Length: 128
Image (cartoon, rainbow, N blue to C red; front, top):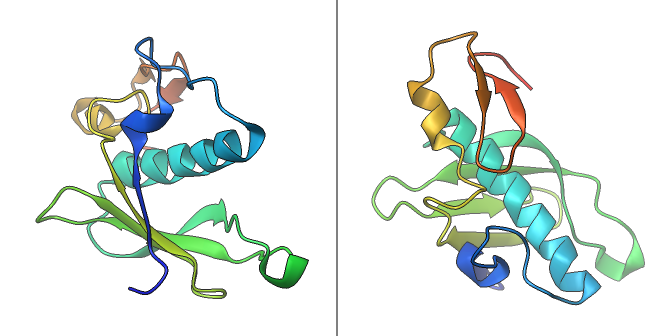
């Protein structure tokens, strides 16, 4: 893919699991990546699916409002995302075991309340 962003989630995280001290644009990118990782790992999605995450790009200074499509690549365990409108795309590595990883919710019985690593309370088995 041309212009693909290759990012490692671990580069954005401190040892305590929060964001590293970063400039605003890096924090915005980290929030976007966290959303993609959370969405894909919560659903264990291995085929590209439209998410509810708005594209982060602003081509020609006009905000792209398309929803990102993303999936978990079964061979590598990486997460791939792309915008069907503007073509922004990337691959996320280093997310496994991070506070962004919500794959542990797959082992939680449907309807059970769960508090993930970031302290967010979630009910498993439902849609967000």
